[in-house]
Length: 164
Image 1 (cartoon, helix red, strand yellow):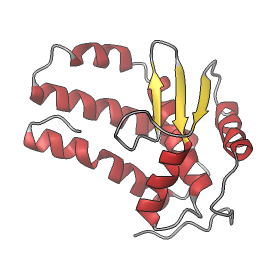
Image 2 (image 1 turned 180 degrees about the vertical axis):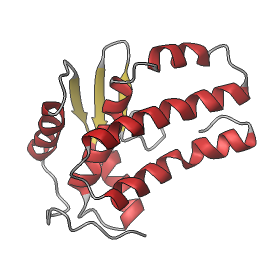
Image 3 (image 1 turned 120 degrees about the horizontal axis):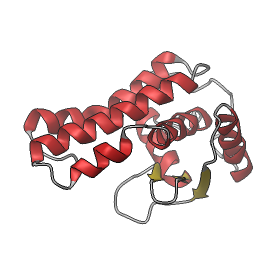
Image 4 (image 1 turned 180 degrees about the horizontal axis):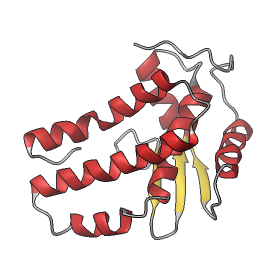
């Protein structure tokens, strides 16, 4: 477990204003007309931190889910602002992926093997973009979150299945 959670020295309770400040900071690094919505929880059963919608060109960030992800990964939420920043940057990666529409369009007609490869490529593209805008985040911290995020996609490719 990588312990880089003391980066900002912030308490576990992050306010909606602080989340908005992080959103504004990252959007300020981009020339982007993107709407980012802050909600507490993802409506499904999965622990989803953020979701990009191609149809509305918007990102919804689920703050309680991001908190839970951070706690599961680090056992505490001291690094929550940095963790939220990383998850948001990943979603921004989807929003700015020039290949996303084509790759997503191919998912419906793909067999299981091809589908898992397409999903991995979509996720890798988002992480590649995220790394370009997270120049001020500790590389080991970012790499560990990326590694854990991509693990089910690599496993699905290896097993020729679709990630959950």
